[in-house]
Length: 76
Image 1 (cartoon, rainbow, N blue to C red):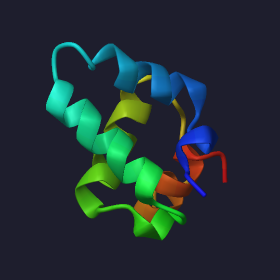
Image 2: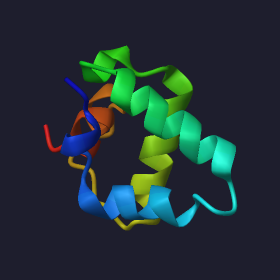
Image 3: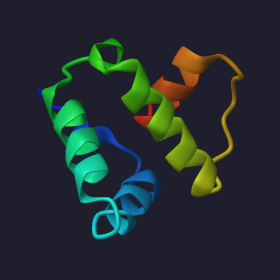
């Protein structure tokens, strides 16, 4: 089961917006999300990048803890 379908739409849109300018980054992030069955399966770099995309999308996290932010990226 992939986490990709659980990714918040506004964050997915930000990732997609970078597809043309940063194709390898986009490809790597999507691959990592598709290969992850659990949030904890994501590489640390990808998790950090997802939080950065969420911040760029204006998402307001309810926690300051890194792992909880990653969960929120996937509506958990």
